[in-house]
Image 1 (tube, rainbow, N blue to C red):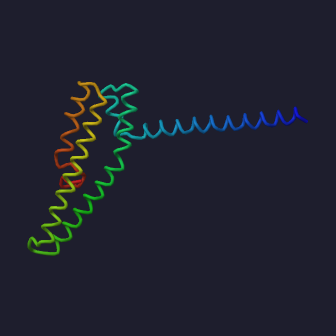
Image 2: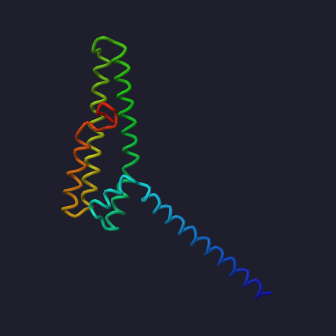
Image 3: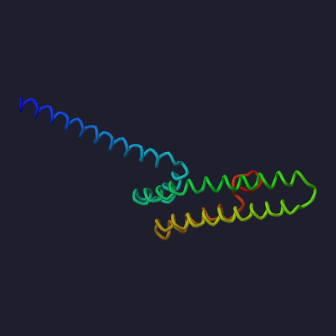
Length: 154
């Protein structure tokens, strides 16, 4: 009886261990897939010849910044929509339109500041030559009117 119970316990422990190992492996695959599913980083990896460690760190920074970027994009779109609605509703610059224009400009400036900060954090992971090339390529995107609308805003 004791021998059977011992075998059963060992089998259960083996099953639990196998489950944990498989789950750990699947989670690692998901993380790798997440990093590989960021096509916006693939050019960075190849163009700047990032090491695996650099790419992992840049990917972490990028993944952490994504929610903030998306939130800023939504705020800019809402502010732009408000400006457009107020501008179409009148033939003059009303106090409401003036306030909406200021809000849009402030939101845009906050977004650009956040993007530049993210770029500096990313550049800090790179060696000096890589950082210089990265910033030379990326800073104009943050500093020019490239926020996704067809007229130069986000």
